[in-house]
Length: 120
Image 1 (cartoon, rainbow, N blue to C red):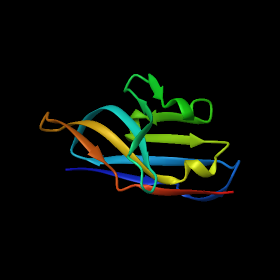
Image 2 (image 1 turned 180 degrees about the vertical axis):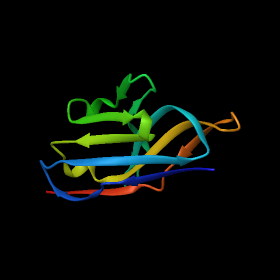
Image 3 (image 1 turned 135 degrees about the vertical axis):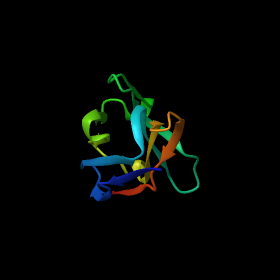
């Protein structure tokens, strides 16, 4: 079993910043890509940013320049630094990881999400 636990969400004023963390634990041999997605009320879940085990990153266009994804492979943890937050960034943010388990299965895992609310 593999668990992903997000933290760092909360309420922030427009223009503020937050740093999300997601720690993976359990039967992990290695982790390939890790990423952050978000889902606003009434909308589909969308990619925010992703990072490979080698550190290559990919961002949704609307997040470029404001959000920074990073990871600590030794800690199986991925981070999302968000600055210049806007009310439209309000959503539940989910962590995702493609994990190679100790059984050498490759599976996709999700965290339960952390709420980010940006007030105007």
